[in-house]
Image 1: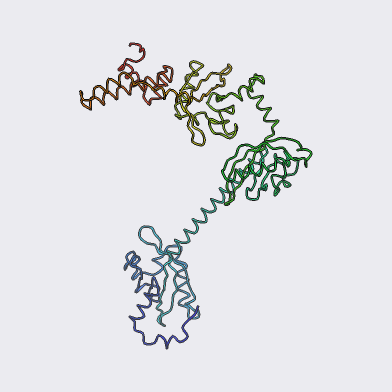
Image 2: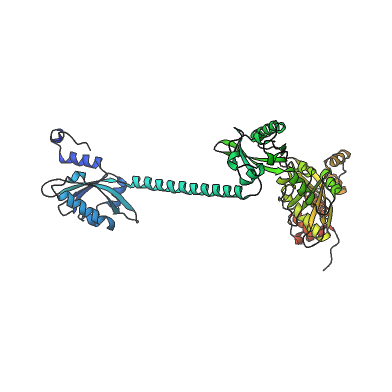
Length: 479
């Protein structure tokens, strides 16, 4: 604290009004107290605070206008100010005043003796803005702590999952092309300790012929974000891992503005063994037929999840590997999500087979292809698998479009009515024709399954039956 060197010389001759103005301007709250601590006068710098306090404090003891937890501090502050041996200017306490509405006014008080009669001057500074800042700081600290806790929990789950899985995984820094993390299964895969993998280039664990394809594969992942699986051969430097062929499957992710790739390793021998076991009971020729057939083939479980696909299905859906399709719902790639697969599964459950179901297949990169789907149940039992054959029919549709289709007779008749009837009547007739054609198409697609046709058209079964009676479609049973 720095005080005036010559206060008598610098401040002599000031009037009471001048001193009052200086006190009011220099403090947020100033109280004049008598020797008993009763408030005899006050000045408030803030209009908002003056409205809340008003003249309610005048004539009341200071200890009576503070909260219960501040009464002891006020009494000690007044005792220190009355003691002539104590420098009252060094005394200061934070006091809380109750305000209307349940709010609290925190004030930092310094009490100064005015004269020998015991009058005191309490100078206060409003601490509400400081309290608000402290509360905001505490809230920010709590929010950061929650974020750190979530990050620590996520990292713990990530490391637990990585180390507990039986499949070998590596994390590679794409900028340096060096291994930054490896799980225990990867260490066993290469026959070394995990710490010996860290910091080493990935190319060190493949033979010389595979080093350049690995570098190009990592570059493709870094630039495009995706790359097809890569088949490489392990290096001869490690006897336990020598002369083994394995595949690399990569997934790109970013961490701290750096690009990394999560690599899954899979032995080619294990892939072949899995492929031979997947279609149980089929011989080698049937397996080759399944894999090489130009039509897309896919096997689903009862819930519609993919269990097995061939290469043509991967090309049709623009997927890089079979692992990306396995476990996914076929509905993910069909043109009418939520409708097509439900209709086909319903027909398979009722009839055991469907033929030439027309729809479209959407690829992962945005391509859309018109297809026809045939399906049947595979095997017997309570939950047999379902086999789907998906054929690309775009070339056939192009040929049909070139030949051209004649307009329905009803549409030709409608066009002949132009000029003879009003537009309102013509539009109503046209709407009826379109509605009838849509219902006929839905019945044809669902092989006359009324429930599936109603779901496809977005109608209730009762509404569909009303329209079938109206247009005389189908053979409806009479009540």
